[in-house]
Amino acid sequence: MTRTLHQFLSVTALLKPVTAVALATALAGCLFQERVEELSGPTMGSTYSVKYVAASDAAPKKQLLVEIESLLERFDRQLSTYRADSDISVFNALPAGQCMPMPDSARELVLAGQQLSQESDGALDLTIGPLLDLWGFGPQGRREQMPSAEEVAKVRQSVGHQHVRVEDEQLCKDAAVQIDFNSIAAGYAVDLVAQRLEALGVESYLVEITGELKAKGRKPGDEPWRIAIEAPRVNERVAQQVLELDGYGVSTSGDYRNYFERDGRRYSHTLDPATGTPIEHSLAAVTVVDPSTLRADGLSTLLMVLGPERGQAFAAEHGIAALFVVHEEQEFVTTSTAAFDELFGAGVEQ
Image 1 (cartoon, rainbow, N blue to C red):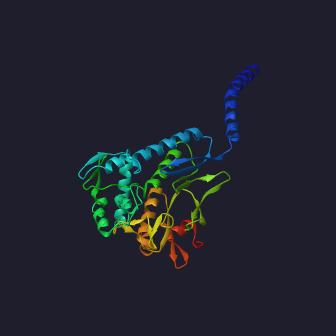
Image 2 (cartoon, rainbow, N blue to C red):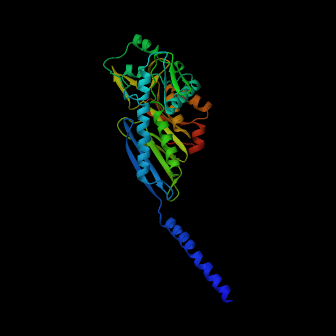
Image 3 (spheres, helix red, strand yellow):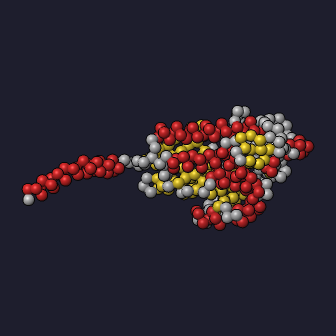
């Protein structure tokens, strides 16, 4: 009996440190209170904001901030048309018939843009940068006078996604085209930040960059991430509808803020690549929801170009979750696709 008791005491003594460690770990988990943290700053000529649930296995806030800002700075250095030293600006300055090694981000965006262009018969075109400048909406734009039909026709000769191709790690052009990623870059950046957050242990977040958004997971208390879709108002910000998101990106395009007026006529910053001129229809805004924020970004632009009738037909045919706001006389009329209603319910408030 004495030997058995001694053996028991010895085994118990050996177990004590292990038990203490396990208990300490359990207590640490209990003591850690999940909370929503926020990171923000300037980027792409605008701002970014990241809200996330700080869980025990996520990277420290300071590390997340460094990683995100490093990613966004690299993104800007590679893809911004507003800085002459960016990779894409150097490529844009090349003459026809040239190739240049480009980072993965640029090649991926070119391929994504070409796919969207092919799907929509050219409603989205990444090479319309010179036309944006001509109308005063691009980085080199000077809107001192209206461009003539002859000027538009001349610039259109250097526009067309078919003049750009990806060859291995290079980007090549067979015409003097210039690429502008503004129609899809922010959405892509949102996806990259979201992927980086997940790689660093963040499972629940809301990422916003220049108005493009993506959310995943739940907040403490099992609360969903909610975002407001803005109603098309020129001088005020009014929520039109609130969406609960989990695993989706959201992009809204509209012509109600970025425009100019001349001789009583309104000119939108959204250009139709088929004509080289600003769109002229009654679609005031369109919101697209998609697992890929890059794709949501591009789709919202091309649907704005297509307009209310063709845009709604395109969205229905391709199963796109979209919300359309159409200007009819003195009011706005809102319609949504079946895919949108499946996600958020029918009967959108106007």
